[in-house]
Length: 340
Image (tube, rainbow, N blue to C red):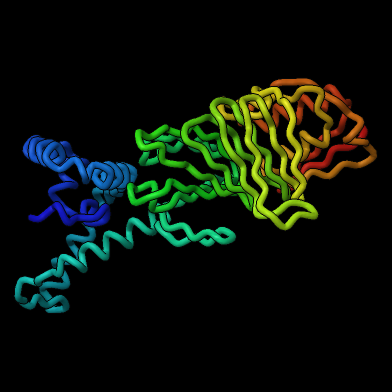
């Protein structure tokens, strides 16, 4: 087999490669490790194909014993009446390309291999999506890691598969820890109208509610905007650790921020430091998917400082009820906060 011409999809579809990755068969492992040593130029494709196969999970539902026996009795009965006829056929021949195509379809369904249009950028690659109240840890093919926040989408392009520039597209919130490459390859995050360019660093991006918040924890990044208020030229902003940049309606503001407040969610905690109730309400809507209604209260004037678990909405509501003396009602997808 001429594996030197194989693509990522080809390796995924190859049964001998599958035996190495999925079952750890000794002979296959010896072969592939030697082959990888002899062909280091295909290391990125091998790693990506292995990651895809390991992520594919299959479950087999075993029928109950009595169900299996009933099916067998039905087969015997119908065979004796001639209902089922067996016709000897020639051994079917399968086109390798058909097999590869079918596997590619499975990959596309499982991982979201697709073409994504984001503004003026076209991305080809793999997508991830989280539900309300859910976070996901992702390791990208280049070794970079992402913690994807609740109700968020992440797409990464074919560049991350070793074919060029590393580019991801984000909708929602994510914390990035970007791996620096020997050839200083850029890593670009597309967040609405903002392009975030880095080499190796740690930062948080949140683009909910028609604005972008970028918090730099470590390293340095450059933000690029196609335009800003009353300006036609491209705008670029250089960030340093501890800085928070907010982009809303083309307007850019930069401030020194408390880093922990913006990245604590990655460790399962929401940190509120002298935060108005309105900020907490927005977080509940964005993170848990509820619509919050207030009756007879002034959310902007009600200030709180607390650390609350990201996975426990009921505890958060009990806390709000106690410190603000509120009546809390949760019904279907709506939460009502009112005076008792």
